[in-house]
Image 1 (cartoon, rainbow, N blue to C red):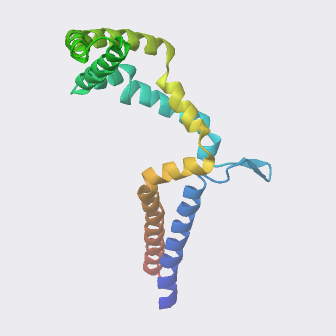
Image 2 (tube, rainbow, N blue to C red):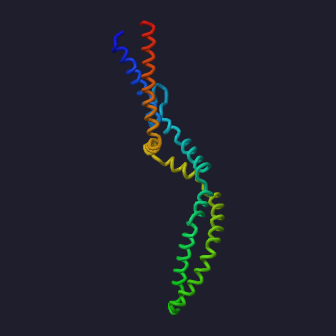
Image 3 (cartoon, rainbow, N blue to C red):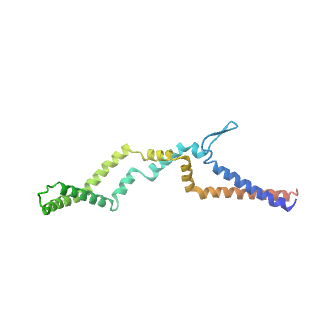
Length: 200
């Protein structure tokens, strides 16, 4: 057996291993539409199971990543409530000032709006908290984050869905291709070793 054989078998094995894994990765997304080949229907895994994928993502988002309660808590924490209270009191102050008749002196308008705004500023946080609690209950009854996410994923074009999946896992999929080449090379090397040791 010549040296060309010893070198070519592992290299051919590497090429076959890399190519088969490359094809397997492509078959995750392609063909997008079902294709009938010798009585066997071939379609990419992602396009074929898109509805199931969308349902699973929606369920994971709602149950494990983001719930209505999480959103309400995010609004309640930090300075968000203070900002909302400030914005509401400024809006009410502007409305009060606009609604007081023109003949009332500006200093009186300012005093009245200051008194009302100060009182509102004290009461608004409690009112907001109570409103958020009610809103949370209403949103839970009427809004499904799972359904929203599911609809968004289902509305992606198959090309866009492929881009999203690849943006998350392109490196891992490339590693699968390379690993196929490495395994193919090692299998070819083992084959040459066995043939060499057996004296063929």
